[in-house]
Length: 333
Image (cartoon, rainbow, N blue to C red; front, side, top):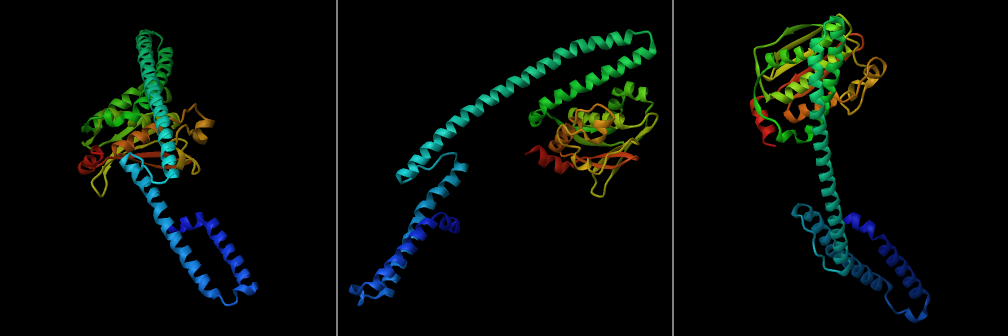
């Protein structure tokens, strides 16, 4: 801080140096000062100036240090000088205005969330009615096409619902032992119509394992990974789903498709918000939100998502679940 203070006060230093040069010129040229010790005067002036700088440094930086500490104490220092008191007063006014604006934004955000949630629940009612109508359709080819389109709408609504709830995930999850096989089969069944349309099958090899997590949010994460695998898989291909234990004892669930794959340029960015990538822009409609939401939810639950992909060979998404002691630390945050 001392070096920063010296840089800030360089105008003082330059003024003092200029004044000393002018004084030395006067003392040298004026014969009235021939008997005066120039060295003594310079030495006294320099020592006095250094003491003044040190005193001002201690005085002024005390206020800045108090400002820094006030971030933790949530109260601004009063200050001693008129300038410091005026500065504190201005900052208090700014903080008050910003707090009011922040509170207004929070209220607007909550109202917007409530509006979106209300809209989603309202849309689910006609969507349920559509499901009943589709089930009553006699023509099987038409029924299958309608089921796929219904499923896409359902998945988009589900994404929006979880997007709205994601910021408050910590208040909306229950950590429990979740059977991995059961939840995987449930999510595969949800995508059945889409898989049948594309002729996609599943090869499943899962451990009889339970993982410690929130069932609802794990289902959502798995839903995004599976729907992504189905979306980018070529027709009449298989998706492999298997689980294993790594060296540290973590359960790892892998979903591997044999589709188009992800380019090296896109791979580091696939979890970014609204990023659709090369394949998403060129082949199928994509919002770029599924993996973004899945990654954010997984991070809050301590689930690590790894991706391995090659163009033309497909992609493998792995979910590594935390151990019991790791989940305890996450839950206590």
